Length: 102
Image (cartoon, rainbow, N blue to C red; front, side):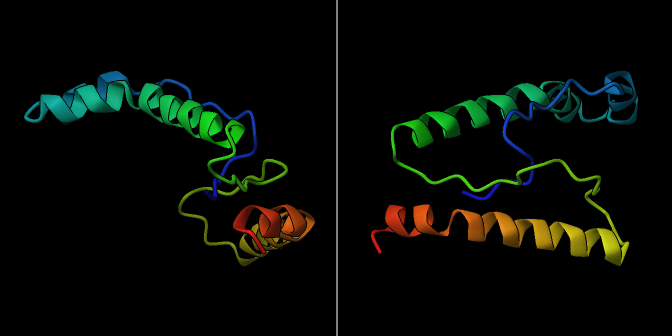
């Protein structure tokens, strides 16, 4: 499993829940989902780490936090993110090979 956030990351409750409620008043189920999105995300992380602990999945994630947004367009930041991912993968290449049985 490849994650985009470093180990220890936990999604926080959105600060704009009320705005979701107003903007999505015709779609209250979506607004409710957005309200609890952080809980679902963190529960998925908890399950993933249990699978990792049991040896049933391999988790590769950045070794540090980079200030790159979902819509990042600055080439230098994207290049730095790519380089970090490459370095992290190379640093764990033996563990990856062992996990996949090679």
